[in-house]
Image 1: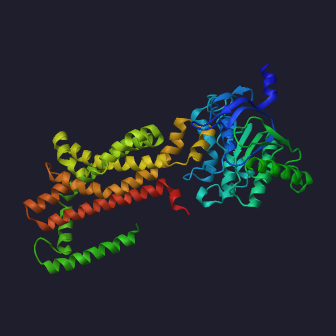
Image 2: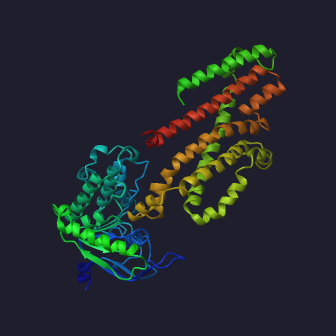
Image 3: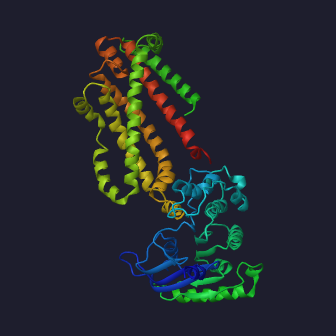
Length: 264
Length: 246
């Protein structure tokens, strides 16, 4: 029984309701599910609740009603196998790139394999060199965040998260402040890395092209309260030439139309 | 501070002093040459003992205030509720010139070292609490959320974020307070003690009318402050190298 649950879905939202105090609900009896290894983009205008959704999945916010199940378990607190990457990188300004990349591991070593902060089968580890190399930032290992570019900072944040070997990666507008070329590089790299390790990806964005480029599935959020999950399939995302394909442009058009309906 | 700048500034002050002394031409303002002469003679006498006594009191007061004020500042800055509760208390006490407490502290803690250390402690404590609190409260929430998502609970956040983040605040507070601490030390040491630069200055000036010795004491006190400034600067470069990279 437990086995089948594990295989089924990475994320299950059951009749999720969420409201901030003294505000109308962002989600009302909202159902949504994500299969293992899928790459989802959550698209919506500001105030639609997309960042809140991510925080709910991360266990940093709690549902007012209903359930958030991650990998078959009801989520009550941040889960050690979930990685979260925010727009603002969240790097420590007083630590070098290498020290920042090691931070997650240091936190784990600090607690030991307690099953709460750290997976139970965790073995103390410290070496992030392979991840620095994989993300192309080993040259900057001894620099401080203030000395490197935005793209390199986001690479550091990704290295820090992947070093923890997550099975799910949550990203909140991770590339919003980057130049177009660097952004596309990092979008592809992220998809590649998630694909290699079978990581389930949920990326939140307000950018239609980014959603269409990264999400195999796209969840569209609208004017709150969100009651029904509106999803779009996008099977060729991440494949070579996808961004130049007809499907990509058609999807962008559809999404744009849907979004303008929302704001009208 | 660069060493060369300090040297130039010292020479400038000595020059102005020399001119002023020549214009005034009274025993109450001896020339720097006379004072330096006495200073170096006194170095072979009792001055080092007084210097050591003062140094010990300042350093002990600094350490005591860091050890108590940093946890307090972190706790207040890390908790909105505590902050709302305690900040008015701090703001009520913070602006009071701590010098007014000197007689009271002396009354309660007696004439020993403890009273002098306590006076310095009171001054530094509030400075450090306020700066560390602001630092802790001002940490970007994205930074904290990122760390929480990496599995960090309260203890790990304290160890990996709050504590290192408070280091520059502690050093800034120390730097801002060194001058006041040394100045108040003079007042604290002018009463009820036989050791310390404050006593030395007061006794030489008021009882012995030995003005050159009094100025030698003032010089020693200024060197004490300068030494402390340099130490804090050095610590900042050692402990916060990231502040010095562009």
